[in-house]
Image 1 (cartoon, rainbow, N blue to C red):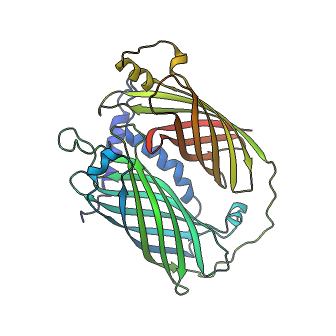
Image 2 (image 1 turned 120 degrees about the horizontal axis):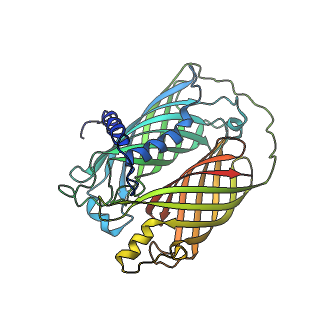
Image 3 (image 1 turned 135 degrees about the vertical axis):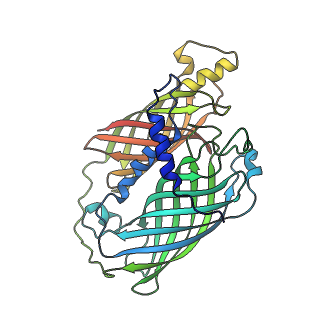
Length: 392
C-alpha cells in the first residue's frame, strides 16, 4: 500500500491561510479547505470534554470492503476490493452528566483511518481524522456490547479530478473533503484488559459540490481489531434518576447558506439560501420526529436556465418550496437530523422532485441552534448548508 500522508494536512493548512488572505470575488470562491475545516470543528465537540486519565483504550482495526457505485457513470473507478486500517483512542463516560446515563454511558473517541481504494492512478487512497461516539444498544449487563458508532470529520484523498492528468475521476473534485462514518459494531471483553472489536459500516466522503465533480465516494466495509484497556478496568458508574421530559413539542426556524460550483470543473461558485420552518415531537430524550416546510433560492439554478436559454429575472421562477418529514437523534446538545422532502412548487426540472438531508445541529444556548448539513438529491450531494436557527 502507498505510505501514509497525514503530514499533508499541515500543508493544506498553509494553503488555506494563503487563500484566506485573498479577497473574495463575487462568485464566492470559497475553498473546500474552509468548508471541511468548519465541518471538522463542528464535530470536534465530541472529544472536547475532559478525557479521563484512567479507563481508556487504544485499539487497531483492519477493514475490507468495496466502493458502492451509486451512479452508473462512476463504475469505471471501481477496480476491486478496498482495504484499510485504523487506530482509535477511546474512553468511556461515567454518567457524571444525565445525557450519559440516558445513552447507557457511551464511549467517546478519536480515529485515524487509512483506506487503500484499489485504484491508485485515479482515486489513490483515503486518510481521515475524526471524532466519534459509540452508543450502546443492548443491556449494560451483557458481556458483549452492541454499539452504534457515529463519526464525522475530515478526509484527505490523494487523487482528485484534474483536467490534465486525472480527468476520468468524476467522483472527487478536491483533495480535502467532509467525512461521515456510521458503523454497527460489537465489543467483546476477552479479559479485564483486552477487547475484541468487530463490525460493519458505511462511509461517505465528498466536498458538497464546492468543487466539481462531486459524485462522492460511498464505501461499505467490515472491520475487526483488538484493543487494550489502560487504568481502572472497573470504572464506577453514577446512577441518578432521569429527569422527565420538560416539553413534548419543539418548533424550529432555521436559516442557511451554501456555496455550489457547477460543471464543468473550475467554474464559478454560486450562493444558495434556504429558510426552514418545522416542528418536532420528542418521543423520549433521544428521539424526535417531525416535519415542516422549506424555501430554497439557488443562484446556480438561474445560471442553468441561462445556459438553456430560459433567462428570467422573476424571483418566483427561481424559488423552490417543499415539504418534509424528519427524524433527529439527540446526544445531549448535539442532534443528527435526517430529512426526506418533496418539492411542491418548482418551475425547473433541475435535480428532480425530491430532496434529502443529513447533518449536525448543536444547541449553543437554550434557544440558539447552529447547523451544518448536506443537502442531497438521492445519492448526489448538492451543497453544504451552514446556518443558525431558533428553537422555541
